[in-house]
Image 1: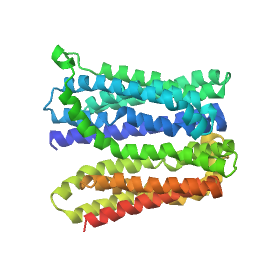
Image 2: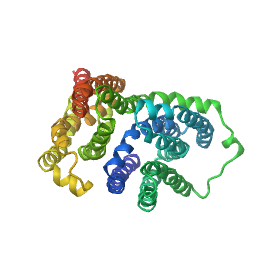
Image 3: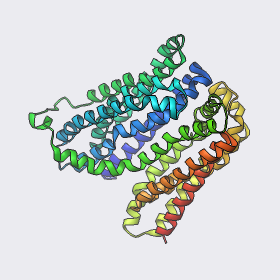
Image 4: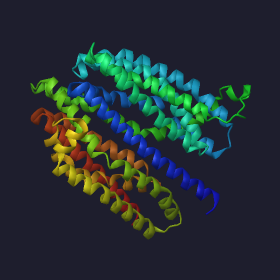
Length: 431
């Protein structure tokens, strides 16, 4: 085995192990959050989480991928790439923070229909610059193919977040549920800062910075943006769709005369309890798909189409072998898992209704990875855009007539549409 292959294999193993540990810690954090703030608190948190997700995507702006790519090419002043992007990132994040301050009242009072969202939304603004800086540093280490700093900082960040939630949130909850939910978001400031400090510890001792390194280079910023903006397009489309979900849901409920507090609670149960359980196999399918990408890229480049098809079929089979048993277990015994993990019986009916559709969701990752490998990544963004438009329409119309069940239908239709479109494009490309 040559050095490049060995380094790639080690990096992949580190990422898979680190990803698994991060996923487990994320699940533990979700369980602890749910048990501390209860159904009402987690419902409020999930109501503003799409806004949080959107602004995190905007905050990072695809910088990690772009920086990683440029540094991996090793034909730039790598230090200057990072130091050129940091000032731009800070200015961009200040603009986003001001934007949040401006739209927070409208978003909370008029769009989400819940005044309690106001302070948690403001808390989002404080997190953004720390998240952006952390992502830039991770991009640097990725480009250097040093995966351990990225993995270790991620795990450390999650542990710090968990400790802060356990210690601080119960005390804040005694004063106010709204402040407690705001605290759940604000703890990310400390956890991201701890991640940044850990990444700095991995900088080599002989690392030297000259005045030339820290002087911002406009050309480097342009080069980063040239790669970053198209890269973040797919994520941004998904985040925008996710952002509008609770807005359309609460608006339709109010128009239909349904209690907004009731629909918010049910939305929180689905997003806070049901979806994390159903998405659990997603880590494994994504890991399989990540391993699939370089293999298919190489085979497709060498016009070995039959081999590409064979590997895709294998990836789909492995994804289903993992997803099918978990889906069946969740379908038959939803009460047990909801009780053990979240200490609740809420969401049993919802879990049973949408679980079968997630069998299609589990094969999306191999199909998506294949589209990336054969240079058809643009279809991923367009497929997601089409499905999100359809989903939002179903949420608004369906929720008006059927309440929360309209939202459940939109989830199932979204899975069917994306999977069908991905399959159609893959099949056409591999003829």
